[in-house]
Image (cartoon, rainbow, N blue to C red; front, side):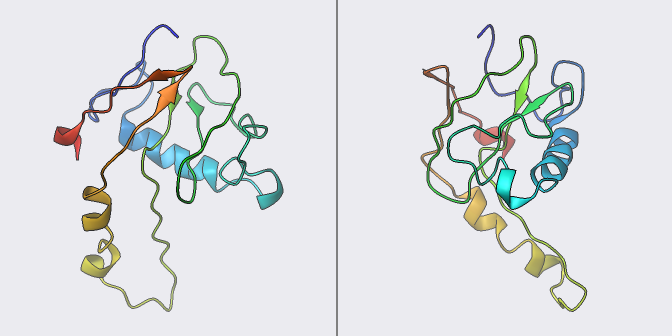
Length: 131
């Protein structure tokens, strides 16, 4: 591991894309695979490479709790993962307005105890100004 940390959301990660752009790509990646081999449902890391073909290596989140996965990231590839995963899927019969759709934000914004480790090293996740 040569460098780890949180990148300012407005900065491009390795000159490739901003966090917003990567987040959009990450969601497409996370939802592009069937359940049998979906990295989001994988608790071991065995499926970490499924459809992970771009210049940034996406790491799957989970549906709650903590995850410990083992996999190898290709040398020189930056990694991207959201520390919090939340989805709000709009359906045609859903009469939820914008205020309703973003009702989950207070819960997400108030999350505490966030952490991540990489190669056994704690990543410093002090980013309250990015919320």
